[in-house]
Image (cartoon, rainbow over all chains, first blue to last red; front, side):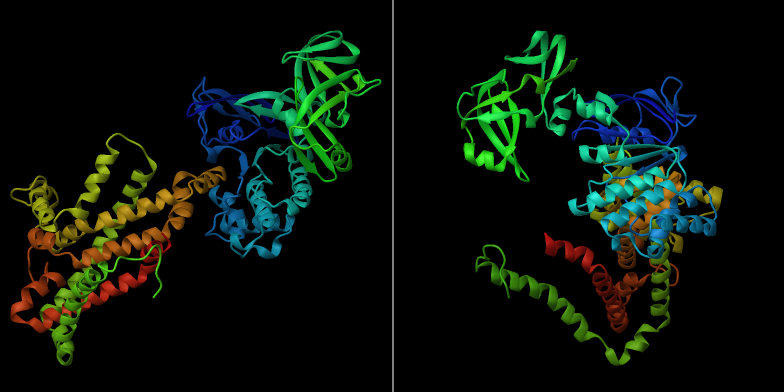
Length: 350
Length: 267
């Protein structure tokens, strides 16, 4: 394991308590809403925030251990950081920015510049070394920040919201870009983000952080397929419930009953994909086993699809075509019946 | 003339005009009395040349001392929390508002060889006599000038994004390297402004220097002291030296115009 961490840190009244491990060559995304403690975790791993208790091992070096009083300052850790808005030194040239880490570690000026130049070539900015960072585009600045963090060959690379500072148009392109550059780095990669898309595109594994704790961890498929928190469910876009299964139905904790195709028992999560929900203005006739009455709370347009939020005993999100939404006249407070086939209901143990 | 906001009550205008006249008239008075034909002669009398040289030397030394001791102090005030920090800052800022002559008296009772707190010790151990010496003049100027530098640099350090220092540390820079290669360059504009203000203040220092260092030609008689002394006996020299000081002020004002008046214009 190239990173093995148990981080407990108090910042103000907020407590972060996270266990995390990652192997060499692995990219882990820490996903969480604002205020979940993502950035504090990253700063703690970098040595910029002291631990209240816990132990952090990077490579085979113990960089933090409150039990034995070990706390290596940031400059003595083999940890590279790409900060959210990159924090390229505005008074230094692009080349000097990349060479900074080597110069700080005592590498001779000429050698440091030579290696920095090699990195600029790798990220496709060989001819921009003499310029000030402010003259580069956001995407170019990010590549400089990446080169600056990687030039010292750290064991662990931390990226704070690597794509958040970029506009939507350049994002898709840079996601691929960043993925390529991350792949060429042999150490452990840890990125924090609140964008599911970035996490899915860049990471092998997800760790979901909520209110300072790990809410869920696993492969991208596991976390997205079986969300275990409202936050992840909302990111993935499914309606999530908790309930108790008995035979072919689940009694939801919030009231209401869901009929399932397979027998269920014990405490379970129930996930309903918005595409599985049909909406009707009249009580539907025929086969669906799950029908709930409710009112439209609001709608979001997603391309030619419309997400409809339905309030009722079982609050749901439905996705219908724009044409269907118009035909059903789904304005706010409209009375609707939502139906879901039993075979479309996903359940998994809590 | 453009008006901003909701306009100015008419009654304010005559008061404002009087106020402007109050500032302009003395300048006009000074300039119209200047003996332009004898200017060179007046500025090159031995006493005037001594005063010019001494003022330059003392004010530059004082600026250097303000930087050497003031920057670390500003750094400590901006970046650390310790009990009594507010009190320390108040003491540092005090010379900005206290009458300089009081500063001079206070310096006297700290550094005078006969009745100063540490003056006797300094004299016995290091053979230093600060009162009535050029060193004393430098000290008096530093006493009133350093607060300008400390206050300006501290505010620069406070408004700087400290995450640049985090970034530098994460790249392997030790604290001194961070300070030298990141912090200092990023607050350089504040440092230049603070040093310029401190130098201008040192150059104009009168009360503390006179009280603590005395008025000895070639040793402690800086330009302001010379102006005061010569006003009766050689008014030409006094006026010309005054104009030199005034010209320096104008240059300083122009140099710092963006920093001070740019801020006012935006707010």
